[in-house]
Length: 67
Image (cartoon, rainbow, N blue to C red; front, side, top):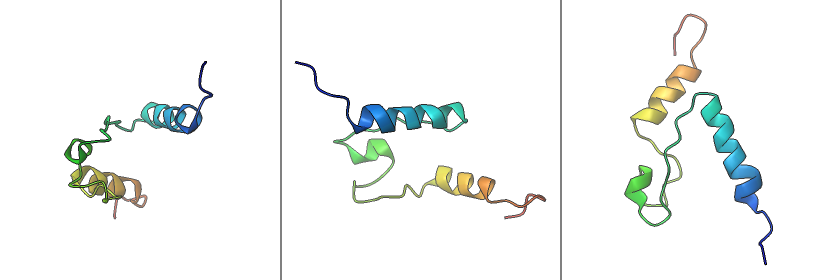
């Protein structure tokens, strides 16, 4: 008996593949160890490390490169 495809098959994997083709970095997480995903606990939704801040500044610049 094979299980039907789930959300990971139809949504998560294709989305991660799309983002990596667009130049995003994909860091494989861990569902049991929070620090391997860049957080202190799984209650943290946003990963507020230096990568997020750098990416937000980069994509939110005007034509002159100003924040």
